[in-house]
Image 1 (cartoon, helix red, strand yellow):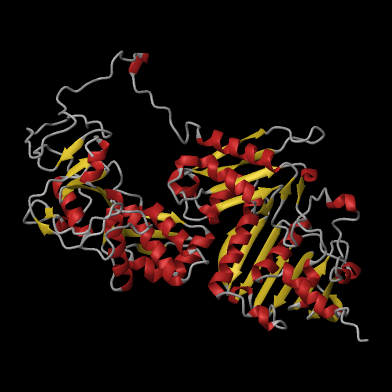
Image 2 (cartoon, helix red, strand yellow; image 1 turned 180 degrees about the vertical axis):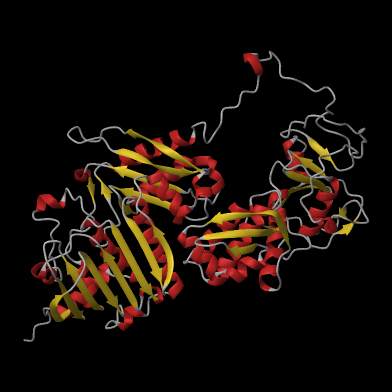
Length: 624
């Protein structure tokens, strides 16, 4: 009887194993750079062509290998990092499995040149598909240089899953950025298609390295986590230490791409720690935003397992809950410091009035529609939680306009909304056409616009409504024409991270259509000469970074990325809860909302308008 179970040939086993370690060109760079760091290198240089798909070269000045060890390095499970089972649970090096080099060599054309300081000459080895084709003595500097060509050349099915050159390049940039942050004492240089993307020089300061990577202007928006030991998780072990930098809420991102986690300087991913950082920021972050954070954890190697996955990027802690709570408490403590939340002293000389100050000039909470109020100057704003602002009053409001001037010049003071036909509750559906007429509009808590519609109460969220208006206008600009922009009197020099700079280069046209004026200013610096008109009085620098963050999101297809940018643009440009509007602005907002394609929800799916029926009000007052 023929055996159904067979022993797989060695070359097939190698290819299967390679699939776990080598997912894309960035995986190759990761394994080679980890070996460089473990070898004691002070300078690491990476050169790629076509996103690393065609060519990768990693060169270091580490300890190198002699002739015998250089060949053993390509034997599966050949390693100098561990010798016993006990070593596996106290790992201090980045690599240890002995799988990286043989896995890489089995799916590529590899050339290695290496030399130790004790040797007068080096060793060159050439490997094709895991088979050593040539080994000879050669002149070489101290250290190791490995060239990897044509990744997955012999596994075409895997090659089909590689992304675009730009996407693969961004993965390599992100990877090396993380290593550069973790090891400021090592210089890292990256060249792509003969163009230098960055060259981070050695420094003894983590703060300086972070500034080199993300720019000084970004560094100014971060606060440092004070280094203090946490609670002891095991009595016989040292206490873990949490340190790093946190971005202030103003530089929050739309995804987790800018959350950098390190355990014993190893770049890692951890749902436990992601959650701890996210809830540590709590309500400081707007809904749907993620923190910019660089978090280092130093912990006894015996309390963390890095042997969870062949890529060694996932870790498990012996006390997951304890580590979660430690990181959460450190984040919370840092974010409640005066640097982030300054202490406000509302009363001078410690005197607290026995009764709250009352401005007797403030009108009653409810005004009758159409009641005229004489103009006043320098009057404190009424309590936003209880006051209806009538659009029929003559009260002077702050002269702050959130709309284009040509959009608020109407012949009539407010649109007519009697054409709304359907009676559905939350949100209402109605015909979009609105004619001008003498309909009263009120503003509640500087957040909601109220009006009577066929005997019912219409409540409009001013931020959500303006978001819908700006979103549709932005989508038209991105697909048909360019948005209007305003020139900056004193252009801003903005230093971008390597990943941001590459994203900007890739999407120059789209960013120009948004209304940004960008000029290259040397290195990774750009000169911002103009910003979109709709974000006046807001930071063009922060918005540009938000747009770049959206465009970096590789999981989205191009169309979805454009929509995400338009949503971000609309959110930044829209009036906010708490912004007081003039009667003309309220009228314009309602008019423009019902002229959109989808007036009943904002781009994020929240309702823009709800209706409270007269029947519901009657029930509230016991009239039903």
